[in-house]
Image (cartoon, rainbow, N blue to C red; front, side, top):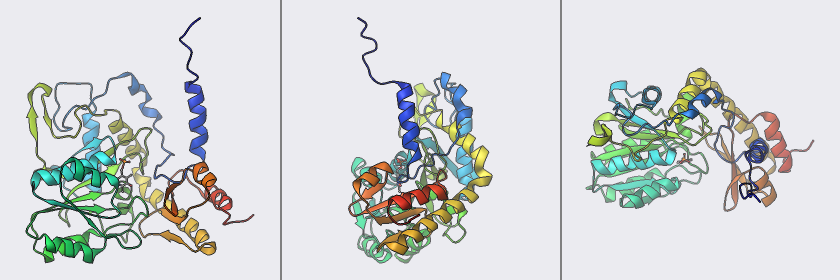
Length: 369
Ligand SMILES: *Cc1c(COP(=O)(O)O)cnc(C)c1O
């Protein structure tokens, strides 16, 4: 008897499940409508962007030229001069947050990290990992940081450098902290030793295409670093992200045997994801604005319908996240909703259309046909 086929798992079976689970998905901010088939021929290579993206290194089977172009794209949308920009393609938004916050600590070893109660857990994790004292700032009811509480906390520690995590799209309600207000507080308090890190996991790709929003503008505001997830708005078959930073503030350490520089959180780095992102950006960058506005329009539609029949429905400006009362467990699982206590949310992404949202509204008992 052969023991080779004891497993009941199969790739065909997996494909079937993934196909069906991708149809009803509304809770996570993932664009499931990407098309990465052009990178398939690359799967036969051991792609590894070992070390710094700007240092060629000795390992030649890499995609660092594509990676640098992605960083240039982000530098461009955030108004950071190409020559002043440094960054890399990360394994996810979390790694970008770890990097940006660590960068703050390397610049100011005795800094305090400030972030709102609505920060992503990776921000708190960074504080723990890097042993940075963390001061949690109260949030407003809709999830944006409470500016007077931030003022008070900074005032209390004005003799200490500050690392500030600014949320551009909170995980739960999609709230956007206003960077111009944060900068105004720092200047009012005369705090000059600070590092502003922007967590723009999803919102980092929405804000540049929304006209009324305070722009994510490195030329106008003293932003130090920004992290964005790649598999959220842009879309990717595997998680990835980017981190962009002001080059002059980046610390590096030369590692001789790599022939490269140790600037990144991980050593070996994914060489496929830079090409996935590059290809998506090449195909769709002229459509990003339309995609953002379309998702926003559908989110407003969904929010309106919920608001008509329920006590509670929330949509923040500059967001495609709609928060509502948590439905029954069955629907939560079926639609893969993200739930927190008494609330649930959906994030409208490019793979949604009016018909699918109507189906969800019907199942929620909000719309009858
Ligand atoms: C999703 C998210 C992250 C983490 O991104 P990953 O790519 O999942 O690691 C960080 N911050 C916010 C606000 C997020 O929504």
